[in-house]
Length: 245
Image (cartoon, rainbow, N blue to C red; front, side, top):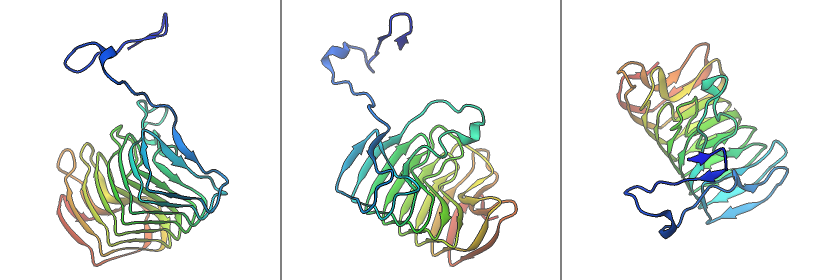
């Protein structure tokens, strides 16, 4: 508790006892690496705790390999439109063009796990899990933009959806996607709305364990209102309220 009258911070430890005998850590910065306007940067084999990575529309060809990112983003309030809390400001933020995230683990986020927009990005062979605990319209992988490749990942555990496919001419292939919709209704493990996929392919995925909060409309693959031009084939979907909608 922070006392606003004198700006004093109080901490109660689980189980009691004095905080003076314990190492206490606090979040220092939102972004451990700010790669805005940067290109051809390689990050490899790093541990990031309670911080994230930011790129911008003018960034390109950055590589992130073998990262372990925990508590990637945190926020506590959804102001104005509660659906939009943290949507474009949380997770590993891949903007610009031709970035790669591979062989990494991204876990625990109040909002997005990985936010993908721009064009030509590759997200492959990662574990991305336990996201959106603030319960907005956030995902383990938010795939927007065009020509994105989301492949061979294990993507799991979200209060709502796990992969948002509001992208064009992209591939969502060969992923295992499971345990979505843990705290909400009317969504899916993969989800999009009002999107012309322009030949986006959702294929060769294994999707399972999608049961919505009240037992209805927990979908494996969900192309919501006005979606068109998606190719969906050769997926295995089981243990869901509905396989595809």
